[in-house]
Image (tube, rainbow, N blue to C red; front, side, top):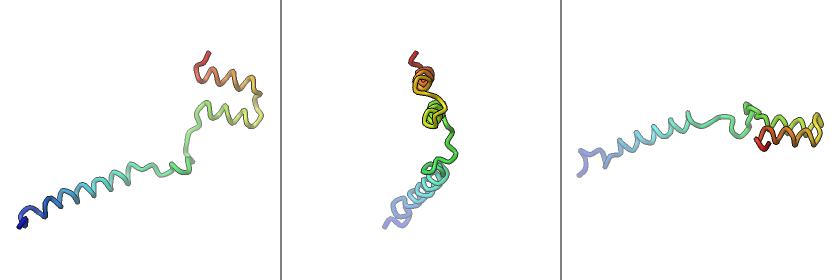
Length: 71
């Protein structure tokens, strides 16, 4: 009974499992938890400069408005 059908399509299921496993392996970003290679955007750079004291509050707010497009 069902000997000619490869146990109800288990061959197809195993191919799907292997394909999904390969997709998961190659599509998973490796540095997501650590964010080592994350590129800083303009707002991130501005916030770092404000936090380090390079710019004052008025400069920060003015530049943030320019970056965010709130002119």
